[in-house]
Length: 113
Image (cartoon, rainbow, N blue to C red):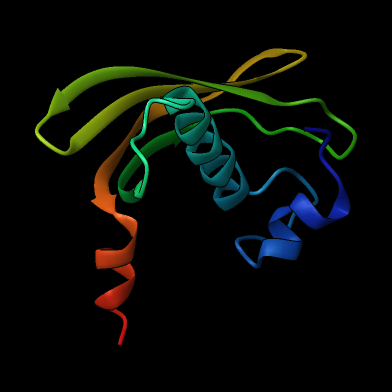
């Protein structure tokens, strides 16, 4: 992704500086973990976020190019733990873990009503 005004700490209300917001970095890492599953999910199954542990270690300015990678590290029943990291042109900007849980989509949505 290329960092825009909409991705900044100011826009996300997580700070007062025009740099990539930590919540946006977290969202990018979650996107990477979902993408890492590819089409490994069965019909009617999805994954939902459960835990995010991210160290956001370097700022990225508007216009910076950022990418995130996720690697499935551990499977414990329905719980999937990914190692994630994000980089910009200067190097590592964030690293950590994302835990997602496999659920049956319809059953999960039924819990909402």
